[in-house]
Image: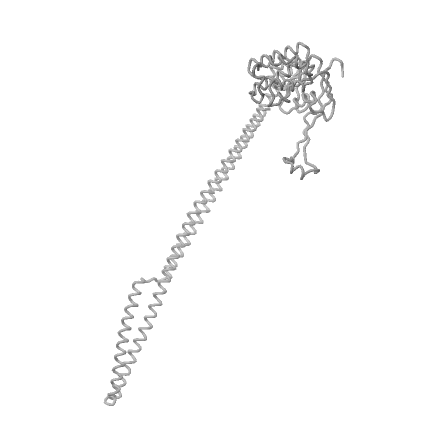
Length: 445
C-alpha cells in the first residue's frame, strides 16, 4: 500500500447468490438439509480498482444496484470480496445504516456509548466526546428517554451525531446527507466541510450530484459493477446526467412503444372477445329458437294425432247408455216373465207365434249385448281421452319447463358475457399496474 493512500481497491469482484428455493421455516430447513439448492450468481462488482489519498473527498455515483453501497461495505469490512483486495489505513467510521447497533430500550446516553464502542472508541474517549455529541444532535432533554420513543428524525440525528464525532481517519457515508430538518441538514453539511478541512478522508455515495460537486474533489461513476468514468465531479456528472437523460428518453420511447403494443394487443383481444360473445349469443339464440320450433312441432303433431273429446260429453253418453241398458234389461225381464206365462198357454198358440216370440226375445238380448258393448267402448274411449288429455297437459308442462330452461340459458349466456367482459377489464388493470410498476422502476433508476 502506497504511503499517500489510505484506501486501495485492486480488481475487486463481489457476487451474491440468489436462491430459487428458500427455506422459510425450521421444518423446511430440516427437510431440505444437505440438499443442493438452485441459485444464481449475481455479480455486483466486476473488477473495480481505484485509490483514495489521505484527505481526499470522493463521491460514488451510479444507478441503483450498480454496486456503490457494496463498495462502501467492502471498505468498512462488513463484507469481503470474492476476488481482489481492499486495503484501508486508519480508523474507519461508516454512516451506512444510521442507528445500526442501537438498542431501542436504552436511553440516548446509553446508546451513545454503545454505538461509539462499535466504532472502536474506548470509554475514556467517549466520555470526552459525549457532550459534543449531545450538543450536535440538539436532542437535549430527550437524551434520558429510551430511543424507541424517538421520532425517525430524532433517531437519525443521534446516529449521525455519534458517527460524525468519532474523529476517524476515514468516513464512509451512504445516502444520509438528508438527515433531520433543513437547519440540521445545513449543520451536517458544514460539519462535513470542517472534517474535510481537518484532513479526514471521506467517501460519499449519493444521487445528489450538487452535494457531491460542493464537497468532493473527485467523482467515480460505477456502471453495472465496473468503473465507467472518474475525475472532476462536474465533468463526470455532465456525462453521467447526459447518459441518464438519454437512457431515460430511450426508456420512455420504449415504454411508449410497449404501451402502443399493449394497447394494440388489448384492442385485438377485445375485438376477439366481442366476436366470441356475438358467436356465443348467436349460438345460444339459434339453439333456443330451434328448441322452440321443435316443441311447437311436437305439440301440433300431438294435437293432430289425438282426437280429444270433452270428458263431460263422454260421461253424458255413458250415463245415457247405462239408462238405455237399464230399460233394455227391464224390458228383457218383462219378456222373460211373459215367456214363462206363455209357456203355460203354449198349447193354445201356433208354432209361428211361438217362433216370433222367441225371435223377439233374442232381438232384445242382442240389443242388450250391443248396448253393453257400446257402453264398454264409450268407457274405453273416455279413459283414452282422459289419458290423452293428461299426456297433453304433461307435454305443455314440459314445454313450459323447456322455455324456463331456455330463459335460464339466456341468463347464463349473459353472465358468461359479463364474465368475459370483467376478465378483459381485469386484464386491462393488470396491464396498467405493470405499466405503472415499470414507470416506478424507471423513476427509481
